[in-house]
Length: 127
Image (cartoon, rainbow, N blue to C red; front, side, top):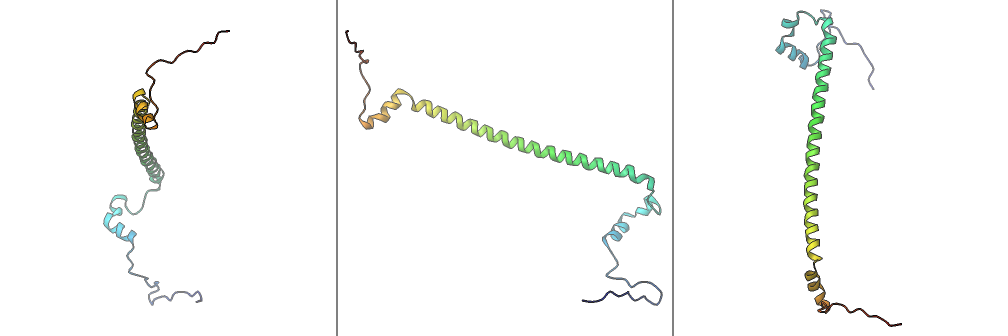
């Protein structure tokens, strides 16, 4: 492991530059020219109100995002319910059709069971 050491100073007393010296922040500062709007520094009295407005904006965006997601979920569930309702209606219709006397007669005719042609007879026993 190497030991910690102080950086060597240049002859003019400055620290040597590491890397290209251009960071993303310096690029943003060049492109936006913030000093033209704010002068040499940011007025401290404006920081809390601006931070509060930014916070409210984030809450507004978050609320809209959640509402949109909820609407999508509700629409998906409604579509699922409609599909299930259609399935239930189809199954009920099939059940009602298959329980008709004529359909039952067709199904049991394979087992050689036939319909009665005369009504049943009531048997009475004399005491």
